[in-house]
Image (tube, rainbow, N blue to C red; front, side, top):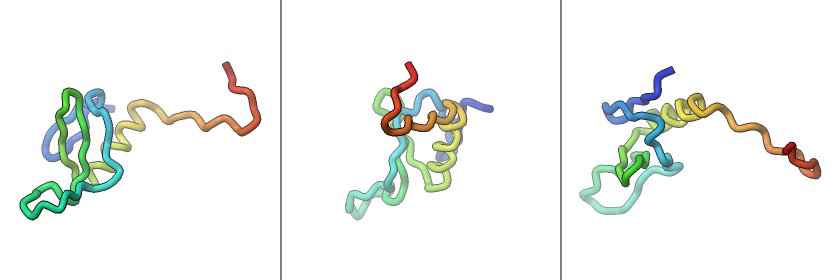
Length: 81
């Protein structure tokens, strides 16, 4: 598996991704060219803007790269330390 994911014709290293927006950008500015795109925030205050398909692909790549999170402990059970 590659540590890169293509977003907006750029190869983004997965380890630089800080967060991925859950909702598309909307600011209401008539001149905004990013409305409807999802922000993917990178280290050092940088961002790339993804189409819905690219955002879903990034999330999938991140989950595969980091591994799936374990299921939460059932209520009432002591955590396995």
